[in-house]
Length: 431
Ligand code: PMP
View (tube, rainbow, N blue to C red):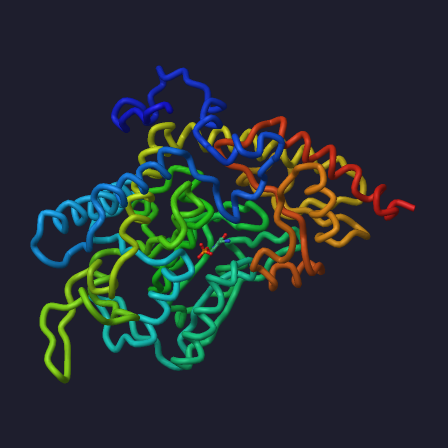
């Protein structure tokens, strides 16, 4: 097994000539299914042996409770747990006190939404508490994880949920968002990269808009952090959410990023052990972030696995992974663009997008498309991809999505395009 060189030697090293194709041998699942084209990394990514091994070694050798007690075992486990947090923080341009472990991205969004619904104060000029008539602004393209928590927050506070509509191709525009904003907007929550269309949001413009109306921002970074260099501090967002399992790490762990002063002012959504300084029978004082949010026994080995995933991604360098996926995005759009009666959703070929391509095949239900592709050894996602409003807005109920990662090859994309071109004929939809 190849060992991962350190970040210092490899990240963005222009003299490094290793081929990203070598990465495939790191993924045991690819070895187990050599004929399968796994084009479903936007749902969940496969894991390299380095991540699986790091988690197993930790469990075998260093496993213990963290932040509890004074034994050598607890010390070693706590160090591994906190070192994973430091790695993740550095990876996304955050301070280590600005990364809160959560179950996944969905949980991270909920921590913010529930915290805001309990907030009674503000921090500096920023008002955290929402009042009736205040507005929460999102887009019609959001994953349900970045929609339902805001519906609930609106219902609890009397705030109003507003959104930028999607256009016929499923993307939204900064002008649409501006038109939906007002001086009552308190929060703008949006996906960095759409899990349906691969659309890449104009984050700087949204942050500028939010600041101009005095709103906070929450970035759903689920589909960006695994695939592009992302620096939350430089982007200037207030909160961000992402999941370990989409970035080569374990399930059961994700992270909430928040600017330290905001996290320290946000009420913890869940309370319990490990979150407090003092407790009496009637009240509690909470620790500063991140501990104030991490109630109960934490996903310790999963955090260690996520730290190893960050090491692994850093080993290749996010610039290089992004460049590879940009090429694959071009190949994916080319592969589907010329097929009659197959409609590409999202940015047109030749415009920037992530390596996520969803299509509508006229006359064939997405589930049939998926089954046909599966019979050819091609794993894609079919359905509404937890984005029903987006699909409804463009007049379909479901689509077929292919998504790539660092281990995806041009040959796999070509197989997808060839098989897709046969779907309508197979089902007689072309007659
Ligand atoms: N947002 C986006 C854009 C996503 O793609 C996903 C996962 N499909 C989520 C949020 C939710 O992620 P998780 O299920 O890991 O919480």
